[in-house]
Image (cartoon, rainbow, N blue to C red; front, side):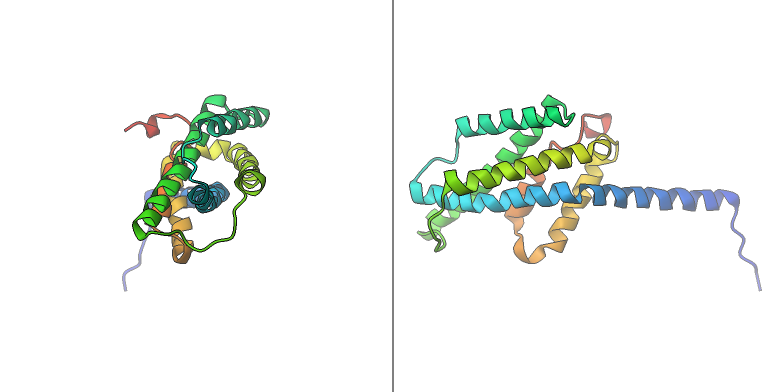
Length: 196
């Protein structure tokens, strides 16, 4: 019977692979709350779209968008988040939200009606909920600063989004996947790994 011997180099290599896998998993775990809250913000987009269907209001709302960006920059600075990062991150969140709204409104126009729904109070209910989500996103950006500054951030973010989509397969769609990828596209801090 032959004995199997493992060289010290092989042990070292296995250790590195194991640590790398653990680091990737840790990154995904650290990013889970940020991904989940971004998905929650996108879920609210359906309510916004229904409200705009009822009122006939445009999807684009430049004054509101400016207000969200300014509020996020101020709140982010208080938590040590760079203003340029906060601006890019929340612009991506807003753009993703609009992708959902445009897509849903177009679907409803093609079918001739929106889903049955009760009156939706955009100003009194939905916007305060979005403001609360914004506060949560700022906290999660602050909590993930180290991970989002790492060279592995983009891979970990893609994996975290993939994990979220797999875990929520029954309540998500291709639109959710596209919008969530867009919402989180500006999450990682600038680094050489972000460049194509």
